[in-house]
Image (cartoon, rainbow, N blue to C red; front, side, top):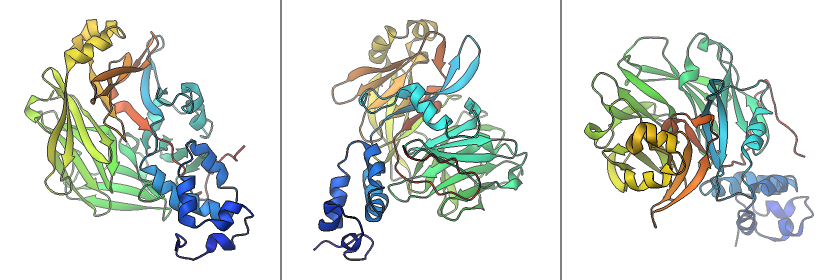
Length: 412
């Protein structure tokens, strides 16, 4: 016999809702039906049917569908040659043209929520459907959810004044595990052997300080802004300018410790450039150029030794033949090897996204198929695609208001 998911038997039957489904079906059956709704916007509307539907969708449906949430597109940093202006733009995923918004529609969906006009430097991160922005010298952070049309201001931590935390701030959010998120800021204000983090939790509504014995704020190394969050750990690339070493820095936000994992075949990787890290089917992967091929590795045993396994090896000449007809200028100027870079990984399949400054394509390993995803306009380009392209998947989690500025828009 089915029981209520929150432990209270028959709660849905005692609900004042007059809906036949809500009053007669067990909760687990109703959840299974709701999770099969393909358009996530309908689920948002269904929340208003009654209290029990709202609870079921929030507490049961959202975690269940989050692990297979469809890829809708990519947020990326763009450059306009005519003005030299950099800005944030959006690439819809061609596999879902009917539901993926056009670039201007998606940009408007979050920029209209913010109380200021965001520039490229104001956008910090995108993690599982939530977007992080910052404004002001005393950082005022904003978290947006374009799907639910919500934007909340994070309570200010005035100790962050005059600290360049916006350069290394990120979101830690996984709706499959929890509806709560964290804003993580690295503190470079003190020169000490340990690293200090300031972490805001949406669950508690407050900031805390964490310190680790492993510091990566050395002047001898650079750190990529783009990071990946998985199972309570933030992963970020680091490149040592002095010795040409490339490592993956791992910061466990739950345990408060950190460590570094050597990247695969580091002696063959370009010493002063970043590769691409991403998630594929909840596995952490790394891709980079090795000789004349793009290699893709999967990180196994990441909680202990961190062992890399090569899963794909794609010849640059093969990919370059497809790209040449789309971006002849970049290929002619830099050559196939220097022009091509991995951009992102598909979160729920083995599809790989790569490209040049002027085009983005997908590679399907099962049949070696290459498809065009996006081609930039003549006066624009994709900036450092391997670290500035953010996959976007819609999220149905409602954002909690912290009593400051609530930029939420009511549903139509």
